[in-house]
Length: 235
Image (cartoon, rainbow, N blue to C red; front, side):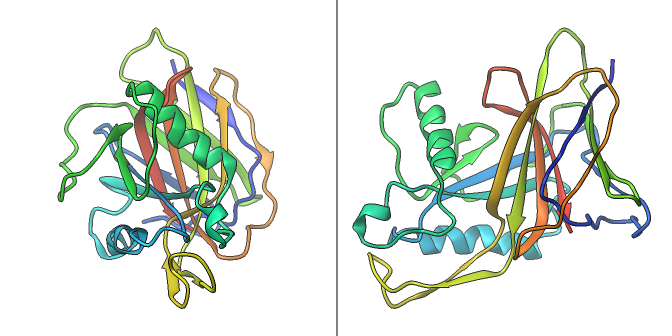
C-alpha cells in the first residue's frame, strides 16, 4: 500500500537533480538515507566546531543521497544572557524525548543523533538496509505531496518536515560565544509532524522564510522518534 500525505508548509520551490521549475521531485531510493541531527545553541561555547562539521556536508557528494542533515537549536542555553533566534521549545522537547527513549534523564550540546541514536563516531556509515522509498513532489502550481512506499505493510507512519536555513550568520554579543560571528547551515526554521494515510491530496504552499534554502523530510512509525527513511534537497 502506498501511504500519501498532503502537507501545508512554508516552503519555497524545491530544486533537485534532474528537476525543472515546472515540476519538481526528489526521493530517497530504497536504501536507507541517514538522518543526521545536531542539537546545538548559539550560547554554547563548544558548539561551533560541531556546527562546522555539519556545515562540511555541503561539499559532500553524499549530501541528500546518503545523509540528510538537520541542525536543531535548543533554548535551554538562553539563560546565560544570549537568546538564540533559531531556538525553540519544540527542538528542546525533541532532544528530551530522545533522552527518555534511551533511558537517560539529561541532555547536552553539542549532540549528534544518527537515525534516532546518539552518534559520536567520526564517519557516517554507508546506507545498507532497505527502508522503502520516500518521495516529495511539488507541482508547477505549488502544490506539495509526500508519498512513502514502505518495504512491508502492517504499520502506520508519520511524516516529519523541516525547512532549513543555509548560510545564516549571527553576530553574538553576549553569553559564552560573545564577540564571535557564527554561521549556520541546515538549521531548522520550522518543523511539522503529521500522520500519513492512504488518501491522495495536495495543498498550496506560501512563500519561504528568509534564509530558507532546503527541506528535509523523514518518516517514522507512528508514536516513535526513530527515523526509518529520509529525503531532502535544496530549494
